[in-house]
Length: 135
Length: 476
Image 1 (spheres, helix red, strand yellow):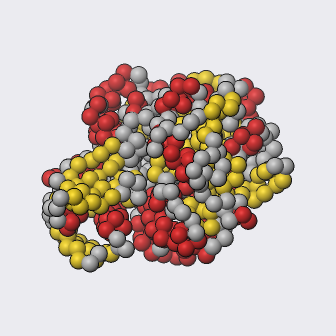
Image 2 (cartoon, helix red, strand yellow):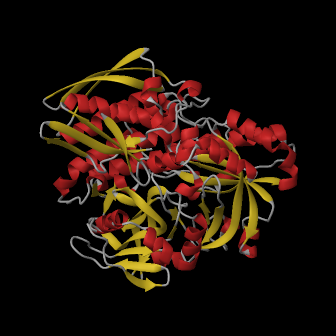
Image 3 (cartoon, chains in turn red, blue):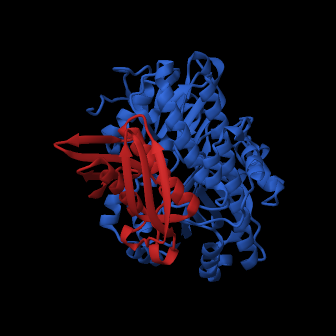
């Protein structure tokens, strides 16, 4: 499950899930939702991502930064994500398509991932992860 | 943390006495209403900046200050490199050298009145704007490096605009000391197809008219008179700047501790200016400044072509181009002595007073034009730098209205289509590809720009010269 939370200038993304990999997948959906409804994105092409981080929080920053990079360079949006995390190493496959101005009506472009309100927490077996995206 | 204790030290100036790890006070310029609007998170960001090594005099916030990440937006801080002073990636932000460029068109309101819809359509068609838009120029790796070293000077050499444009840009059109070798291949890749694009979010291109003159002599010096039609472009360094910020924030955050810097907030990511990483970032960040200057120069040429197609009489000349997300080495007086300091302005505009050597000869006796962008429905302002601004806040002023409401709250409150209709009734034409994007940028989601400008002028940071109202707005 993902949601956006308010930040005075930018947009926060938050996800909750029972395992860390699913929470990471959900934050990426929240990232896409800054631009358009993830449901509107067709799975026409797939792209692979690998990244790592010194801890789970920095892994989250590197993961979403990598997704933003692929969106920007390929002019694509992604609507489905499969993430595997082992020992702070992440490998992912994501599916999406080229931005279509008429169908996606993209609202705003994510510029970068900030360290603002960045947290990865596990409470009672449930992961809650979040950060603020600069738009 | 709780809202820190504020002491009013001037009619438009408030101080936070140093406490905890603060090395210097926090100083906020505002009137009574604006100071009440500045929330505790923004104040704590002002205090966090005051804790960074080598900070000189104070951690400043302009009247449009609001919550950023690391630095507040509207934050100004000077660091002394000879005293362990730092450079902070978070103090510049991700949109390096985002700024405003304003152009004269040589046209009056009557001359464009019957052709406004056509002008709006043509600008919307020919100026790449919004998410995923690409420019018509694709740069090779070598060309990209030349652009990063040369800024607007490179763009003029490539046929975008004229040499006369350059003296009306900060530092003559390019940041010296750029080092494209310190910009990652990923950052360069993001930029390859993005030259000459506006971007999205709060970026825009506006056709505006001058509706009020506050200072006749300075307005005349800037070539402004009531009824003049102007064009303003608000955008930055696009994907390249965003990636430089991403790359260096990561490095700075991880190296800060090795220099004994205790970061109160990771986003403040700082290292000493005189460290290898500090110098690398300076070289990369200056490349980002040049990218933004080249981008606004290319967009200027695209705007000129649109105007030339429709108005034979149009003659678009530069008023000025000023960036509001930068760190620059400038000479300032501290306790009577001249010092080279690194001035971070995060959502704040440089505001040099009359006589400054960086000003074009034509403006030398008037001060630097300070360009304040409003929102789609409200006014923009042209101010002039004052000599007083030097002693107040290292020659700095506000940069815009500043958001007062989050994007998530704005989309719940307004609909884009309703905003377009309301503005149409006020004869403002809005062009955008996204209705949600418009709702996020609703004029009422921002502070009152007139109040921000009034407080800036009353505080002495800059003086009011002219007020502009939007006629056409192409939203990014």
